[in-house]
Structures are given as C-alpha cells and as structure tokens.
Image 1 (cartoon, rainbow, N blue to C red):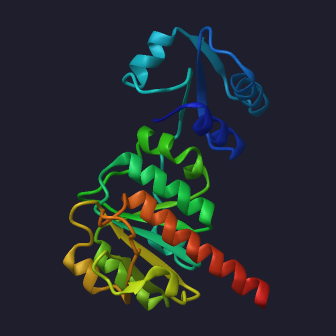
Image 2: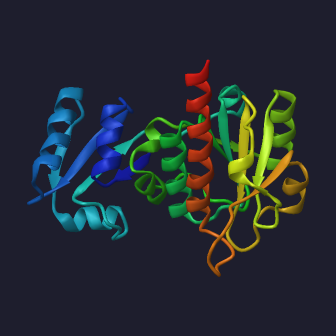
Length: 241
C-alpha cells in the first residue's frame, strides 16, 4: 500500500487517474483546495473519510500532510527498456536524500525529461517524502530502478544515447554542449559526486561555472540548471526545423 500526503501529491494523483483506495481528510481542515480534492475524489469514486488530525499525524509519522492523506497501490518502478527512447533521461548515482530525489523528479518532469533512473543499492527509492517533494510529478514521470547503474549506461549507449556526466572537475561548461537527440544526464550525490566507474562511462563531462566561492551546487539545483538548458535548446531546434 502506497501513502501519499499533502495537497499537491493527492490532487495530482486524482488528476492522473492513479488507483487510490481512499482519501483521509483531517477534521476541521477546509479551504478551496481541500474542497477541490473532496469534489475530485467523489467524481472519481474514491471514498473520502474525515479523521482526527492526530490520526493523520500517526499515519505520516508527524510529517507535514496539510490535512490530506491518500492510500493507493504501491509505487511501481518502470523497466529500463520501457523508458529508453525518451529524448532525455536523468540518471542518479547514489542520491540518498529523499528531498533531492523528489526535487529532481519535479525539475525533470517540468523540463521535459522522459524518466529518472536510480540504482537499487546505496540510493533512496520512492517514498512518501519523495512524492511530497516531487509535488505530483511522479504521477506522470516514470522512475526506473536498475541493479547496476554503470551497466545501465552501457545498455543506453547501445540504444544510441550519449551520456553526459555533471562533474565540478570537468572542463566543458554545460551551456556549450550540443545535445545528442538521445541524451542522458548523470548526477552524483553531494560529497562524493560521480563514482569512478560511472564517471568513466560518460561520453562527456560537464561543469556548471560558479562565480562565487562555493565549489558546487545542491544536486537538485544542478539538475534543474542543466535540464532546462537542454529543454531550451531542444525547443530552439524544433522551431528551426
């Protein structure tokens, strides 16, 4: 059973037609956005129950749920073969912070990426915290979980992808790259960056030029910077066709 909490994640689940078993609303919670969830749930035939706020606190382990919790089918992971073919994939090397994964998924969906690929080991999976940070993006953006990220990169190369690693030690600034029609961006966790085997399998390494004294950005911010550059150039290329 998968738990979603918060106004945006629950509303996007309803809009996307995701299978929900029931929605719980905290007694006393109100406002136009809560009412919109109630109306959408009833239209979709999803039962709505009103429970004491303390009950929702226990269900969400006291995380910020905004008075709304939904139960539905467990979050499934897409196979790599089902997402290959998308113009852009985002590969994450050892990202363990659920807030970062959720924020990256949100940026990836907004920029037009086709999926996020994560490894099974030493990385966070999809949780309620991830879904909340993604603000509903996971209802539309597939997450693929692979056993070995380096092997997945080789498989993508065989499909025609170019792999771009974001690394502060790289020489090529990200905004100077000419993106391949099939592209994949690899980002590492804060602290260690890209692991050696992953770094060696990248076709190009890109850096984000920094004007200040801080050497690197939060991985979710770095993802947004590079992804929206790709999105801008993709839109320009389409207008030129």
